Image (spheres, one colour):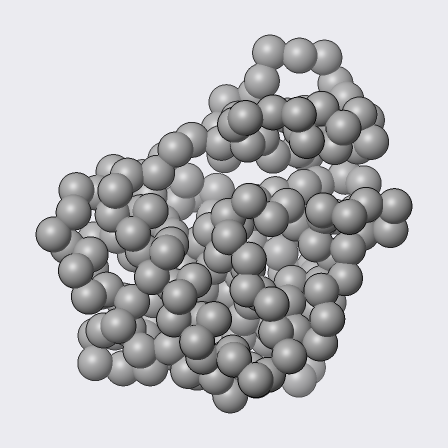
Length: 192
């Protein structure tokens, strides 16, 4: 998470109205607004690669794949976040009263960086786990060709799997992502 923005506490509706007018992105948690940091060339490349591979894998499955500009209601009216890539299946549902806040993410992807890794593994992951629609959470490393996959089990618990080069990530709906395809060309670019 970035640094708190220099402003007083905002209500969720005031944050949403303010955020829609901003050039840069900000996350919201319990009245506080946090500026989002920009990504390295490798981070941006990996986000784009995952988006392309995920869109291809989900083609024909009734899913929509969104860029990092899609705001997610991690806790309606309390916490709004952005992921590097997000997919909603069975129709994209927006938070009531909004047309730009996704309420039903099924797949969330975060590309890890030094500045955000603790947040992506900690508070943000904790908020994502509370979303009943979320089935797959992917953490994409910038350092090595592997993807950490957290998958919701039928009993609500989460199964962890480290998926490395030469392997496939298999999502809850059966779609697959090839780790090698995601990372092809990534290590030619500088990382954060």
